[in-house]
Amino acid sequence: MSLSDLLHDMRMSFIAAPQPSFGNLDTLGSLALNAALVQAVPFLWMVSIVGVDDATSPRFDPLKPGLRSGRKAQGRFLVPAQPGKREHTYEELDSTAIWTWQQLAQMLAGLDQRQANNLLEDLALAAFGDDLIRIGFRGESAATNTDPAANPNGEDVMVGWPALAKAADPEGARVLRDAVTFDTSGNGHYADLDAMVYALIAKLPEECRNDPRLVVMVGGDLLRAHQQAHLAPGQVRDKQQRMKIADLSYISHQHMASTYLAVTLVENLQVLTLNHSHRLSAGNIDDLASWSIRYNRVQSYALGVPTAYAAFDAITLAK
Image (cartoon, rainbow, N blue to C red; front, side, top):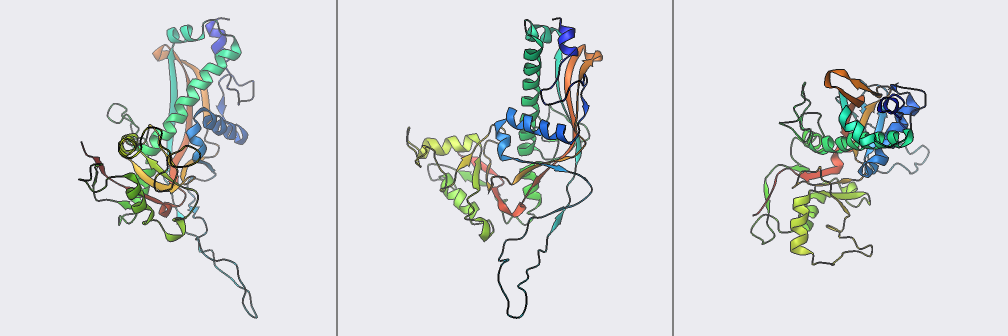
């Protein structure tokens, strides 16, 4: 098949044919896209991807922890829900994978239509899903014009989870503002991650401290420094051959800042997307002599329970 034929008949596996240029996705298509992104980037399994009908409507917090069952003589035992409300800022967001004709000719040479579809879909979704995580951990603001040269980790694309947690805790009760030094020789504020994580757990609300969903999220440089100092080769902490930090499971990811350290509930990280705003398109970009897959939506990041997130704001590794 010719390159033009392959690109003209390119279909995403989760989009009902025939839709040569895709377009606005219906509810089922949006759900299928989210499922495909999660499959393309396994880390997204732990993130809550939530569809929102109205970007202007505040979201209600979960029920506040506490006893809600009991009895009362000659009456009913009643406990008001007293939900809180939070507003989120949504931004229109573009994700794009662009290839030149020369690149496509080399990539798709000898492939049939199904193979070409799978290759292009896999590459695009992996890139788009990777950016969801990158911006979630590194985003600090939403500039009118994104500058990838100055902000290669999406710092100016959208406000991500760490920045949201800090803004929700202006007093620094859970996101600890004082700079600390991690020095495994004992000359800094902390010599191991266990002590740091125990300090963070103590900052969480009492009802969260023993929640089995709590996890430690730790940046790569900080984790390696701890492991090199405190974990001999082959040494493990539990029967599943996994190390634990302060008796909690940990997660590390390339898009976390190198000295990032936080404790939160595993599903507390949220990506909110406005329903009916998902749009996929594919086709030529004549001005660039290229072809692309583009994904546009209206999106926001959120923490499901802001108080169930504790972190150090500034950690320095001793040299």
